[in-house]
Amino acid sequence: MSDLSPAFEISEPGGAKRVIGFAGDWVAGQRFPDPSELLGKSGATDKIELLYLDGANLGRWDTLFVSFIYRLSGEARAADIELDDSGLPEGARKLVELATAVSERHGVRKLEADTGWLAALGTATINTWKEVHGLLLFAGELTLGLSRLLRGKARFRGVDFGMALQHAGPQALPIVGLISVLVGMILAYVGALQLKAFGAELYIADLVALGMVREMGAMMTAIIMAGRTGAAYASQLGTMQVNEEIDALRTLGFSPIDFLVLPRMLALILMMPLLCLYADFLGILGGALVGALTLDISLLEYYVQARRAVGMDDIWAGIIKSAVFGVLVAAAGCMHGIQSGRSASAVGNAATSAVVTGIVFIVVADALLTIFYDLIGL
Image 1 (tube, rainbow, N blue to C red):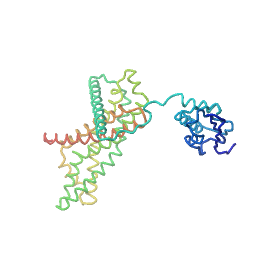
Image 2: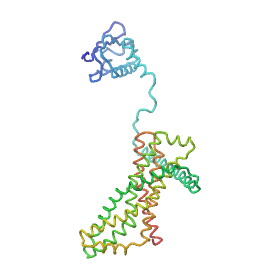
Image 3: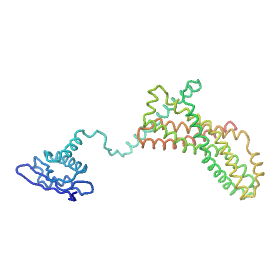
Image 4: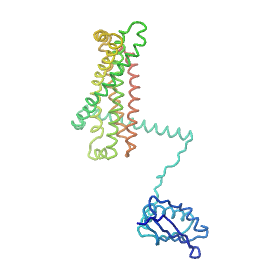
């Protein structure tokens, strides 16, 4: 096996013809000359009319040599020089012909975008309109799907609904439980800093119980499900979009909204109130642990005070919020999944957008519901 480094020799048989003879091994790991420099060494390019490539002494070569010849041919065309590669090995010539047979598709290369403020404003406006249009389109399709569901005409598999229930319910219990206990403990510590000054440590039970039942239980559960289940929905449906499975469903006459979105949305709507109650209980328990361990409040005192502070109206307020949050999280995840592009990066972007959109929806809906509760006295 040869260990020769790549080399070339330039000769001038006469007239406007130049010959470049290749020798040595032109393979990966070797240092290749620059094609433009090699062309310049062959003499004044304005006097050259024909450049002949001789591979009689060429050793080993691979696709890097073919790439080098391709770039050399481009330099020769730019200098209006005819290139004759008949002296090269047949395999190399065929690969070069294959590379030059199809011209580069227009728009493949990434162009530098205009970074002016007016262009940025126009781009942002167009992108915002596309997002709003996609949101309205999905909302309309979802409304039609729900109407078919109420009329008993929606078609989806029961096994898909069961799997969605399991994913959105029992499998979410560990993370929801852990976060809820920690949030209850944080609320208790924050309240203790102020209530200790007045000797009213017992009212920590009121603070934690009302905070968890009316607000934090539903919101923290929704945020967890947006990052966990909403992103999963977007990834699942986005991958199906990449694999053209959604197109196949449409071809077979199935509505993707009925077959894919409704089972997931119904599962999350049913599971969110139950997860909310679970989070409320564990959050109150976390506050009780702080009261018992650091504030000398017995569990019985804490229980009586919390029960006195929380009524059924407070519990229903949190449950209603959680159901609304479930609709929004499922809608955000499924919308971005259905509207995903057909590449791996597009699926990742869809999952990210689903989480961001879901959290924004949750915060906005929570603010509106809180104002509405205040208006109706709930």
